[in-house]
Length: 343
Image 1: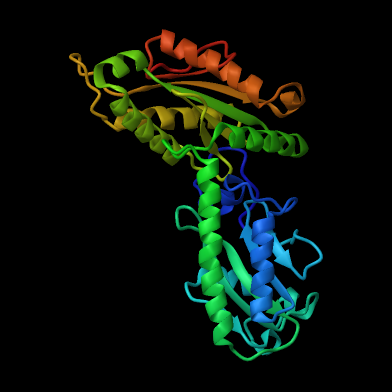
Image 2 (image 1 turned 120 degrees about the vertical axis):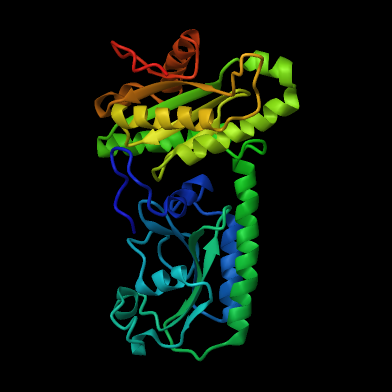
């Protein structure tokens, strides 16, 4: 697993794999009946005592669905699951205790004393590897073609189900998180930040000259512009856990867990410049292109208990309005004595 989320912006390491669990609404604390039934079916078809959908989260791995285990929460990936996650084909191990790659694995030497293992990587919405679908047994077994076929077929069903789940949680027009799911993630991150004593930052962004663009180019062209802006914002987020939602028709809200004011300002400038660099063909007679105004609000760790996501978005929106009043295509930090450099 990657180390815990850093406090300021850093180069991302396989972050889609790490944050996809939250993006899909998967949690070690609550299961989903449909996934549980699929895992039970896998165990019956494979004739194994244990089966699981093992998801790699940015904090720790966990069972999104499991059969034959006492808990959904696991402290770390085993060597068996790491190997299965990294390869394209199904990993089948007839007797892990006799395999030099896995003989010392804690899952082999201790509970649940795995001997037979068969696992295949599960891919998410953007084809990133997000976890493992696997069968396990405490008794050695010879290779079984039926097990391989069951894993391949049920992997396809699980991926289809996760894609459908993702579609429900994402805005169909822009691909960003739906507001309700964004609020749920924000509430979870707020509690996590209070436990870890780290700050949270919120960014609110809106297209400049929205009414002029709509009147000149039409609603269909504006929709294309919004999709392009959403993609630019998403590619500007460099850390696991950062997420963006279409907050209303024209605004986007970005949540930056564990990020103080310097990191938030850096991200705001990346967002602003990424949209400006699009050179989207919304030019008027003056040659003005599609641009963005941005407001930033950072909540220090000692203030988290006195505020929440919604109030922070309101504060960031106030800074956004100041950016727009100053001419747009710039970012401002809420509550600062002096505005940052204007662009």
